[in-house]
Length: 222
Image (tube, rainbow, N blue to C red; front, side, top):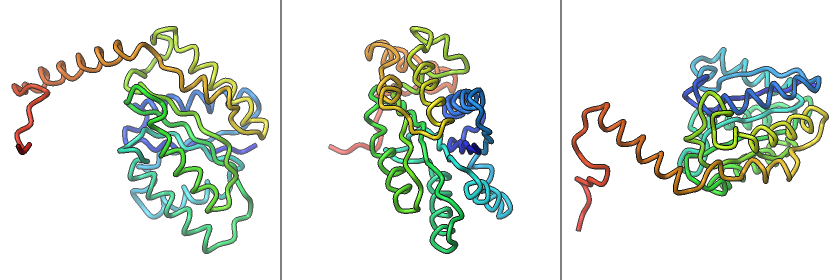
């Protein structure tokens, strides 16, 4: 089976989306699938790059979007690619009907904040003749770094959920509901995530020599 991983984060290879998508891709390879990876923001820089992305989508049996939540939606580069895919599939009869799966993470503590973005992707699949293959959505994405095993609990839930999803996708199925539920479990207590996040903001303030407090609102009214 030929699968295509499209990383939609503008951060590219350093992003949490790339890390999670790459782990899923590697798991699928272990189950016999051929998986190629493309970075959307890079491909959109030229017409040749756009053509390569569109051709890759047409040739895939399974397309996987891996991206971060941006204002309850998809990053702008990925949205633009979806528009181009829809334009092509409306103009040219597709040779096949690839499945579409999604891996999305957000900086909010709750995984359900990704629901709108997942719904957008599911509707896109329906409108373009693709077959929906499910989603893995998680909150607390800001804590995901280069090594999942450094997370509380060693990232066990994430790795087990991706393992279940990769096996099912590689065998022509969809992401199991059990994998979706496991992936959505909080990585740590909410108070701990908030505490770490606030500490990170203060460190950035100090690094950038900003003297204003986080609560400073110079343009607020009333």
